[in-house]
Length: 276
View 1 (cartoon, rainbow, N blue to C red):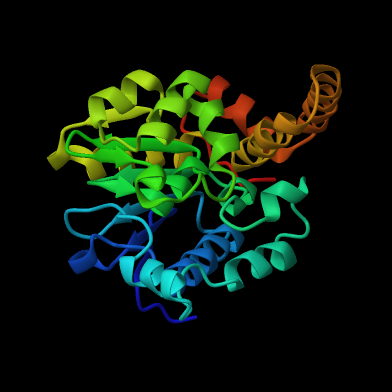
View 2: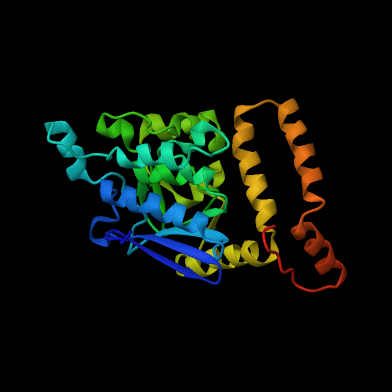
């Protein structure tokens, strides 16, 4: 698939997906949604990729759904989110460990590799929702966040009312959704919406440092299993989670990555993990 509204690059085992409509603050369109979906699954299936970074082109991260699309919905002339990503997610994500992880916009949770948002500027609406399903969020100190839904006569979309309280707690989720106010990077960090805030000019360097550590020092097999456990265990209880964890630990012992992890530690050298 060729891309019109994103860029895709792989370097040093890290795939970078850049939303690229800078003149519109990378506002989301149906085309961008389809291209992002394709890029995520392309990176997920590529053995040369171990970490996925998502960022925005120019001074914005993602300003939410393009207002022309919203106007089209209002006027009954089409627009809005195309059904293709949802349909493809249900089809191509049918082997996800839980059905919810194969649905539209939640699919980054089912990609078997870490997904890191490098939030370089304003993020709103659908851009805000989509980043909730990434594993890590690292923000520039110039980043700004808003759900915006209540101020457009809309509601919390695509499961964000389920995911947001799990990240920031119910009180903060109510604040962000009911007010639609703009939150700066420092407040986003304090409430747990982002993992880290870094100086704007250092954002990508710091994100790639984090990605490089995971790509070179951590077992892809371990990350793959733990990511699946983290998300699927949101739908189960402690007893079931513990039972599965015990079984997965036993399955780790004969793995090549476990042998390499022990050997590299004893031999005091960097690991050479294969993901097996």
